[in-house]
Image (spheres, rainbow, N blue to C red):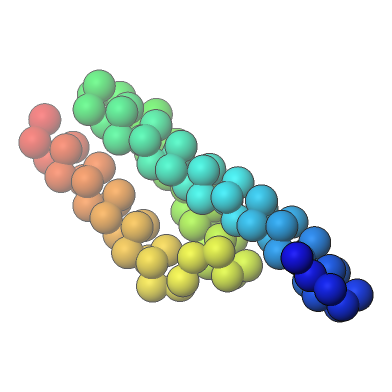
Length: 90
């Protein structure tokens, strides 16, 4: 357990930041799953409408330091390739 006043404050900050990071990551996972599900159900237009929301969540998470910049870029690229590949197949 933290002893000094500054260590106690750092602990409080860490807990808040951890909660925010978890929320951001959950949002990214949720949107990714929704998009993949829509694409597999042949609802490509609905998936494309969710894409900007996912991009926004990824960019915000990268900006805030929850995930790294290249991780965000990789995830955006991967989901875009997935959607385009499935569109071309059908």
